[in-house]
Amino acid sequence: MILLENPLFAGISASELSQMEDCFQMERKTYREKEELPIGGKIGILLSGCISLNRLDIDGNLSMLEYMTEGGIFGAFFSLFADTSDLMVICEKACTVVFIDTFHITKRCHNACHHHTVVVENLLQLMTEKVQQLSEKVEILSHRSIREKLLCYFRMQSGKQGSVHFELPFSFSALASYLCVDRSAMTRELRKMKAEGLLEVNGRNICLYA
Amino acid sequence: MILLENPLFAGISASELSQMEDCFQMERKTYREKEELPIGGKIGILLSGCISLNRLDIDGNLSMLEYMTEGGIFGAFFSLFADTSDLMVICEKACTVVFIDTFHITKRCHNACHHHTVVVENLLQLMTEKVQQLSEKVEILSHRSIREKLLCYFRMQSGKQGSVHFELPFSFSALASYLCVDRSAMTRELRKMKAEGLLEVNGRNICLYA
DNA sequence: AAAGTGTTGTTGCAAATGCAACAGAAAGGG
DNA sequence: CCCTTTCTGTTGCATTTGCAACAACACTTT
Image (cartoon, helix red, strand yellow):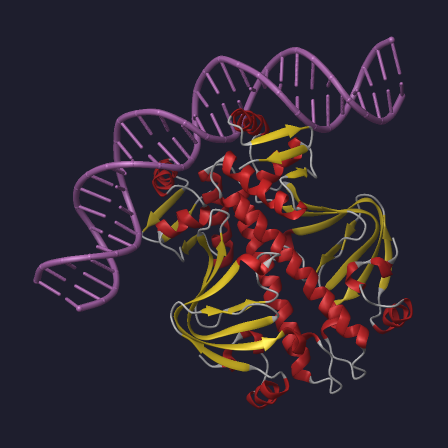
């Protein structure tokens, strides 16, 4: 994937970007599977490959917080916890990353360049999306029963896809994990809901009546 | 509360701020209880009084998402959902608000003012904190049992206050509501945990042994 | 073809949880 | 001071849930 296609640079021309690459002192680096990547003070943009964001558990276990494919942005502004001390970014598939020091984004330069403004706008936009995405998850997880979680999630999907018919972007196993409930219990609840006529299921296609 | 004390303007002098008030065309408005405030395209800074952020439920009910006291920041960049169409900001106690059009924050001016840089840095910092705060809540709610949620929350508090002794910032009722569990069931679980020697409770002071 | 991997559906059972209801304690307001 | 509200602790009970285990199916790899 090309750097220019990254949402952080939406609305920026190729020539502006190459100018910015010098001005922002962007660094391009490659990593191999299982190598560790730095986090502090930089934004990382994943051009190819995959990485994971992990936290060192209190029991010493590594638990994966996020899995990212090409186009993903990580590091400063996006790291999920206050203390990055127990966070680790690990290369999952050989990857290429562009690093930008946060300093270059927040500082004002005397040129008042158009592209600089745009990057800050894009960054704010991306963070707003992150906030929204997390808020949605909180809203779903705030419900106490499996049924309520399912309905909440389904309504959101229905809203996003603009129809009572919509398609799961997940497998049902992954959905259970996303909703933080037991898969077999979720299947059981879905069966009940079908029986009550609340919805219909065909593979990953769902039709919501409630 | 004075505008200058707001975290958005941390590191900015009084003279810089008054200059900025003109340059950014900040508007100061007052509202009475139950009045509705605008959201779109602006940041609102709450100087005094209280507001609430509400969502119009699918069943037509208003559910409160956030309650904010003086110093709070709301609106663009902070609104929790993608479509602000069903969001409402309502004045809970007579309040004074300063509005800033987002345009003035993201645009580059030719002066490359120090204070402009600082405000953008502060804004990014505030949003980062919001992301962290939401991520923490997701992590807590991801656990399935009341005991695990409690332990997760207690460990975070213990970490933040830097000791196995720490104080709840909440009443226990509010804690149950924050963890999205039944209060009586939570009390029951706390009793068990005390019996097992996992922790001690004195009013809102907690000592965590696990 | 065979073996392996991941997804989905099912069930029994024990344990956890929510719910409702009640009562005493603590805090705040007039 | 009394009155009201909120917080806290308790219990019984029905329901929900997680867990473990198994089977059928699709798909990929060898």
